[in-house]
Length: 609
Image (cartoon, rainbow, N blue to C red; front, top):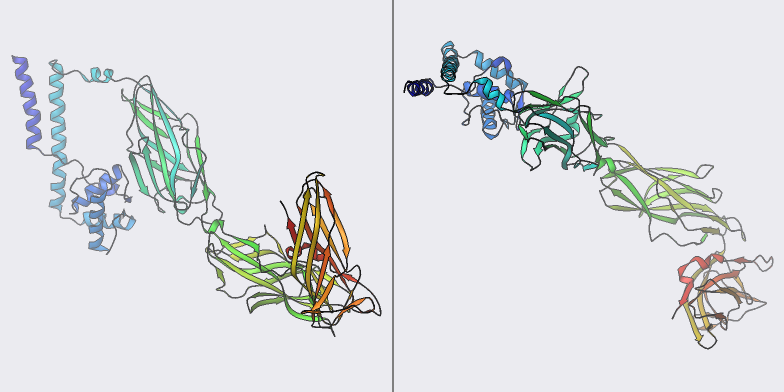
């Protein structure tokens, strides 16, 4: 009976002491105040909460050690009293100094009363220890050594979780970039903290805006917004972040994992294409059931993630040939001096990808500087710049309007015009114009150039006198002989308008043009043809002295026919008007052949069955 009486007495003293001596869970230590921020956990937060409450700012849950919504409201109210409007998401360096000053100026009586609970706590702690010791001596409670022996020693192993690998994040995206896997052998281990080291080339707050640690179920163990003061720096100015209060239970002979998730800033600095973290030897701290501290990993673990610039950093120009680019043709200089001005020869599109881009330069070249004497960059009727090609044919346009911006994923069209010189008839000078590079500035002010695509004009022929062509009709009729397995062209008809520019044209009445037929297997047959009819409007025109004369400015229609070509097998056939002969002076015959016609789709016709 005495044994149970002493047990009752001890328990009465124990609970009686707690009833009559209330104890405050946390006291304020002004000298230990440091900046803390929303989402942070740990002793620094707990001390800041205690000091805020001591200064008169209410936190209903008390000093929990977690910077949550209640603490944010208390910080917001504190700042409002001495600073002004504040979102309360951070107790900064100025706030720490102000709070210290406020606590230092409090009346001595308040300081005495604030110390009283601590003294009471010490008294109660001593009382509890004495009572527990008596009960242990009486055999009513196991001894401390017995309790310690009940826990098992656990051995901690730390390695990389394979679920985090080959990570790619865009601007503004969130994702896991670090995976730590823990194993406890022999006994359970509780992982308490991780020393997370930042090893990227620029400060962490320029790359990530938030960081949190989660477990395998997605439960948030730690989170913080990332600002200039979130990560600390060692004496070598390397950034690191101590993450404490994790309390991850690793079961005996089992595994547990934690992951670091980050949110990438909305606009990455130019040239930043990756981030990296590492956890060095013994940067992970845990404690086993026997109360022994355990550390890991045994060697440095590293992680990296690829960063993609969804906007400015990946901005580029894309060039493409515009469908309105003139087809290859004769371009005409003045019959007297051979000069022509602002002749359009090229249209090209410029598209801004991933960002708004301001165009500053356009670079290109011409193939015949004796013929092309000036090049113009224009948009519609607006000439933006004019240049004389260098001896090698290169030119650089400066786009001077400071506000000439191509919006993201939008396209603008430019034209290239030329001043040309055509030699005296019957000379023909060919040339092309190319644009290879467009340079500009993105929204961050970085210079962007695109050189992967070159757009080039069609081949142009500079003359003083020559024809303009237009197809009027093109037909082909084909039959197949199943018995002999042959394909026969019954007829091919081309009717072509020819306009004389710069002076009269003389078209021969024999061997005037060629028609080429081509089968699917690659067999070809070329036939020289004379016109079967030449008309002005509906009026037939006859040849004179072996020529049809087309006066300057007039348009004559020439009709050509061929038939009877037979090819082996059952095949599809196509025909093209391959060439057209003309002269500009019968006193000194020098026939020119417009052989480029066969490259133009309007001078092709197809048949298939």
